[in-house]
Image (cartoon, rainbow, N blue to C red):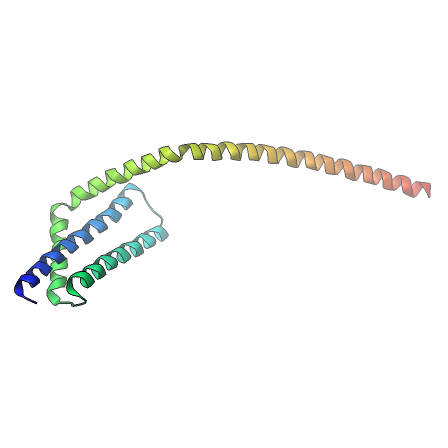
Amino acid sequence: MELKEETITFFVFIIVGIIIGIIFDFFRAMRKVKKYKEKYIYIQDIIFFLLVGMVLAGVLIYKLEYGLRLYLFFSLFLGVVIYASTISSYIVKVFCKFIKVSNSIIEFVFLPLFLYKLIFMTIYTFLSKKTKKYCNKFYNMISYLHKLNKSKIHKIK
């Protein structure tokens, strides 16, 4: 590679480091907005590493054609450090606002479904209790009639 190509590759990997920082801050903002259980945090971490791996693999294949150099790790680290020290806190705030707004929109859109579910479950619970009560009464009546009928048959013989 020529020096010009090496310099371009160095700056491309600084940009990739910034992209990795942005992806990290998105997951960080998700955890700031809502507290997740530990198993969901593991899933988020796996998704993060898969995304970062895909970004790195894509850039390595596209830009370097599988060539790997030591200075690329330095440029990735430099990109993450530049991002973290300059605009990371602002991006986290933007992501937090975005996540809160999108959660509000999702709740607003799905609110009728939650209401229908609540109404349906209330009606279902009421009807199932009443049905069970009347089925028990009917069963008791049938078993009483059966006992009466059985006792009359035995007396006739």
